[in-house]
Image 1 (cartoon, one colour):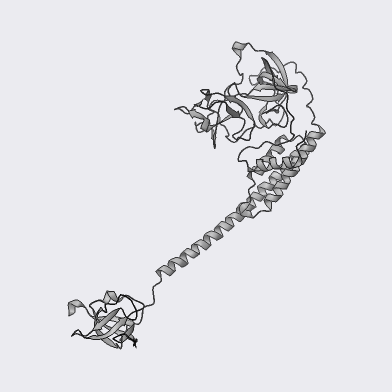
Image 2: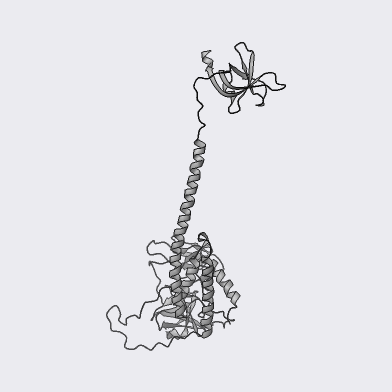
Length: 419
C-alpha cells in the first residue's frame, strides 16, 4: 500500500527537521508477517555490495554493506529476508544517557530496561535490537585518538548478539548449522581501527574483487553463479519517484528563503541516500547532480553570509566609534582671555535648595549681599567660599529680594590660601 501524498510530505518534513541520519520513505508496508525464528545457521554472502537493512524490506534504510564471502549468523526469516546477527564491523549505537561508561572508557553498562540499539545515532532510525539492564557493551574505539566513538547523544558499541538486521535471502547461501555452544558471531571485532562517527554505511567496493588470495594460493576451482538480482516493481519505482519529487520541492522552497535562513544540510543527506541506494539508476544520477548543485549553492551562501556578517560588524564598529567619540568629546573651551567682570565677591548660600531663580549668593568682603547667582551650565557648589569674578546677565525676579546674575563665565580670582 502506498503512502498517501500528504502523509509522504509530512514524513519528509519531519525528516528535514531531524538532525541526524535519514531514512528514505520509499514504500509503506501493511502489517508485516512476524519473523520466524529458526535454528541458527552460518550463511555466506554471494554478491558484492549487498545491503544489510534495519528491517525486512527495501523500504528500510541500509545500515551496512556486505562483500562477497562475508559470513553471517542467520537466526530467522521473514518474507524472503534473512534475519542475521549484526557483523562486528557494522555500526551500532545506543543512547549515552542509558549507559554508564567504565573507568577506562572501553565498555558500557546498560542502566535502563529494554534499551534500543540503532543503526545510526538518531531516534528516527529503526531499532535493530534491545538490551536489558546490566548488559555489558564493548565500546567502539577510534584508532587515531584512542577514545570511544561518540556522536551527540549516542555512543557507538560493538554489536552485541541482540543486534540483528536483514538481508535479502537471494544473496545468502547456507554453509552449515551452528551448534548452540558455538553460537558466536563469526566477524572479528574492529579493534583499534579508524572509525568515522558519522558513517552508517560503508562504501561498497568499486569493482569485483580478484579471486586470488593474499598468500598466493590459487583461486577457488568453482564459483556458483549468483542469482539475478530482484528487479524493483513499477509500484516501488513510482512511489520512489513521487517521494523524490517532493524532496525536490522542499529544496526549491528552502532556496527561496533569505540567505541567512537557508539550511541545506539535512536535504543533502536525504539526496545522498538516493544517490547511494535509489532503486532507479536515473534517480541516483539526478540525486548526484542535485548534490553538486547544493554544494555550489552552499559556497555562494557562505560567501553571502560572510559578506553580510562583515557589513554588520563594520556597522557595529562604526556605531561604537561614534559613541566613543561622543563620550570623549569635550565641550569647547571658552576663551579665557581678559574678562570684563560685572561683579566680584565671595560665593555663599541663599538658603534655597532650588536652582531657580538662584542657588547661590555673592558677598563683599564685609559680608554684604551683592547679587544672587545662578549657573545653568555648571555647579556653583565647587566655588563655595571662593572669591570669584563673574560675567553674565543681570535679571530681576518679582518677589525675589536681590538681583540675580545668570552666569556665563566664572573665574576664581583669589584662592583661600591667598586671602
